[in-house]
Length: 224
Image (cartoon, rainbow, N blue to C red):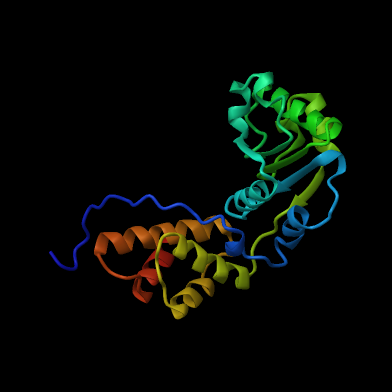
């Protein structure tokens, strides 16, 4: 019946990782410059640290395309044999650390050595982590000497631009006044922005309607 919510299958929609879609601002400019400019990576290594949704994977994808580098998830490293990555010279390792897996740590240590000794480049991304989450002493030492760049929490301006991008990634066009209403009332958090957009996307699909101010108000009320 019109106006009632219905079960619906979620559409598979991936984020856009084009360089032109990355929102450069004070929160991430150092990271952007580190993968684009002439900033040196000591011993060929760079570590990007930031919370979920802060743009680490986007930056890694941009860098990998520019450098024709391989992209691999950290948890997959343990299943690779030495010969499989022994000839890699440019590598982006996503979601590093925290698994407590010696095989993954050993593989990442070898990639660190490759970058330092064979004129390679190694980009790593990670959420904030403690030294104790890396059990291999040799790897802790290499990470300690790696250039580290942090992606900082968003301000309101970045949050507004991020919401527009997240909606666009889902092929959703949302009025500016709705975006501004949301930004003025939500926490400045990458994760909260993604959760809110997902909720509004599902609500819009279930109700068969464009996203409205009333929907935004409803979702914000539930999230508080």
